[in-house]
Length: 257
Image (cartoon, rainbow, N blue to C red; front, side, top):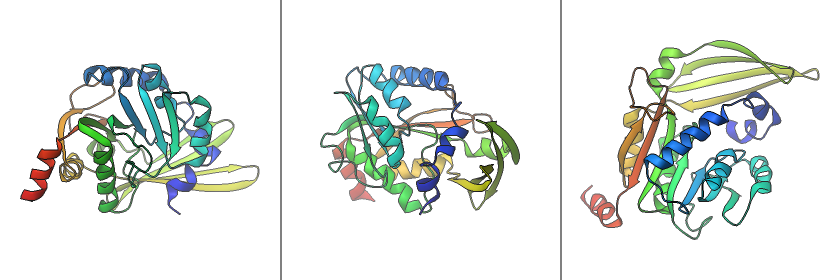
């Protein structure tokens, strides 16, 4: 079983990250939909939605939202927020969304706050882009909010300790074989635990290759949650905005390759 299939379903994952800045996240999402001029009532998929906070906020902004996540525990939690225009389902982003999960194509797919790069093979990463392409309407947006691999390498803190709810989490980070690996050690009720996170350090060029191969064109790159211009050396984020090329353009691209 992959690391994310176990770690994300534990209560400890949510304890460790419980103090994430949701105000910053909501401000970012508000800026994003305004900058992209996504009309109210548009259909949006929150891919890798976790505990659903961003799906709920998008719905509050007036969008029809489908939140998808591999974690059964997270989706079970999210179900309490459902309404006529907000739904949640368990789904592996490597698999087809349309028509297996959604019978209708959508206006935008958001993959936010580093919910990509968990898979071992390039083919699996490519399958995510293919799946997103198939669910999007022509000219629909795919927003991939990813880390800036150069910034990660430049700012990596190798060891840290944080306390959350009386638990001391000892965190060690390293870069190995094009991945940033975070080992998480802690003890609770006399039992020792060890989990880890492993994210592939996809470059800007890597991500664009996945996109182009799946019928997308990149239209914007932001460098942070204030939507400032991306800078390879100083930007903490690499927020890619892709647009699905029209079906006729996609067909031409495939036939000429």
